[in-house]
Image (cartoon, rainbow, N blue to C red; front, top):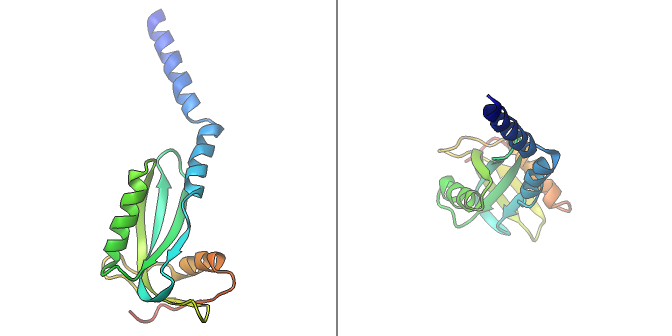
Length: 146
């Protein structure tokens, strides 16, 4: 029985050590390095809202990605989620999509529409993140349109 007690005690120490504040800080720092917004500078293009979950704890960050090269919303998701997940420590979940009209000369961004494959993103969440990233822009959204 003595041997079993030592093993259980060592296992408990390893498990408790695994969930220390320092460990949670590492997860938070990893997520903090993920840019919340990345958009092409001009044009009308598809965008998606992605939730990036830490594999280490319950922390997450929502990110907005929009690119003119994408024929489908899934093209963006596959590339972005693949890169993030290959980096290790995170899982990604698409929260929906839509379209963005970005006019950098006029400093205007309009978020609207939906994704056939992922559904409509919460444009209010996407817009809030975009406004933080582009503080001198007029950023609007609507559920209408495709």
